[in-house]
Image (cartoon, rainbow, N blue to C red; front, side):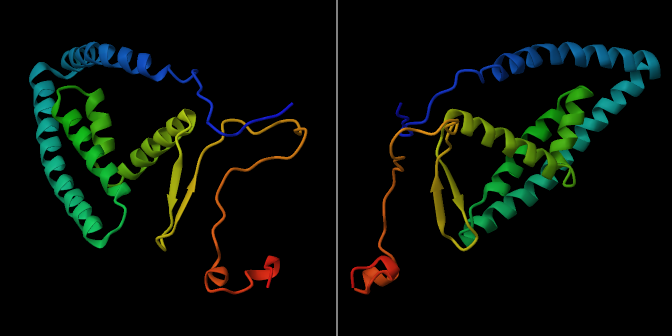
Length: 194
């Protein structure tokens, strides 16, 4: 029995998120209208309209303020040569959060505030990063880790490690690079042929 680790295997079990998202997008307006009617009956129509208008104005103001901060941070990251992953995620979350807050409704406003407020956005960013990393891993997409010192560690996800020992040698695909001593004509360490 031989096992191959060349190409990542495709999994077809992760296609549930699109139907759930579609159902949520269809159901959300109905839930919003139901909740607006319930709140209107509880506190009155004019107070409900005032709250919805106030939330929309708050959303527009917050989106402008946080969007300006995120844009400055994004430009600073580009100028310093830093990988702007957090800044890009913040910019996207601010845009989506602003749109959700400007839309009339209470459920969308909760998510909009979660994405827009500077003290709740890191949690939303972590959840988003986890979801993206998990999806990439399931798709078998190669990931790259960029260290703070600028060195890049390339790798790929392996769907399932072998559970039983294989017959024969285990082959690991890769390239061998010369170390600094071998490039200068040295012995190359303890395995060199001096």
